[in-house]
Image (cartoon, one colour):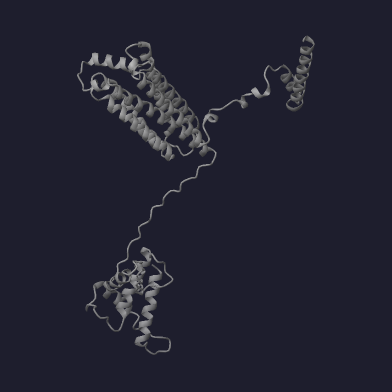
Length: 409
């Protein structure tokens, strides 16, 4: 027997030496690295880069989170079933009623609630460690996860050690107020206010993941049912059925909150890896100004739109009126200078036309008369040949002079 043990020891020693030699040859090139490898107490697999990270605890598949939710629902159903079946023996054994009593502070149900809330706090820390590196979060909305981790940690402690009840009793004695609901209102009102504000902030941050938003809404509804039962008649709260409903709503709210945080952690991790499709922003349609239609064109458009099959047909477009005194080479939106030049040219043309236009009043203004006098000086101009200028030549000369004047403006 001793001989066999010695052979086994020799074989084990040879295997260990071969492992050390292989590691030194592969990972220890320099002399310092060889000394570290030879004098190391742990294998290279125990290095820090080989440790499990927080993101490794996030389930990559939806079936993993679904399995967790199913197990949680089964545990809640088992606790409620134990309370229901062991209720007849509560009067006989006080220790048994303390363990399985759903309303007691040190019961199994309170421990399960504490574990769920503690897991929610840890999951919130994981989301915070990843969510705070988002580039588009300019307002720092990731801080809501720090508040979520702190609040769920306090709720976890209160589930096992109900310190909120002691604070409510002390506040009731200090103020001496007689409020509806008794001392329950003193701790339930501030708790509901803080949780309501936190729920609104969480919904604003969870809107990127629809399934996480749905589970948070389910958690809020479960907590709302528990609060409604808590504010009911004190005599009805002591009934076994009411106790089961109240404890079931609380545990279901804790479970849904944990599932929603884990779902959002998975969403953030997939977004970091680039596996989430980016939603395209909806572009707002620009309202185009409607052109004024004539009565005839409006009637035609209404006739064409009314068809048997309800098809929409565009109405024919009206032809644009020809511009008056505007060149095709000028821009569509005239400037102030071009407007002034057009007006001046139009005045000169209207002033020196031989035939007056219809609709124009007789008698010009003083300004037109002054311009007419200025251009009358050119009527006596005679060419070098000695003959007087004709009426057409004087008119042409006036127009040329007017154009030169407008060009100098």
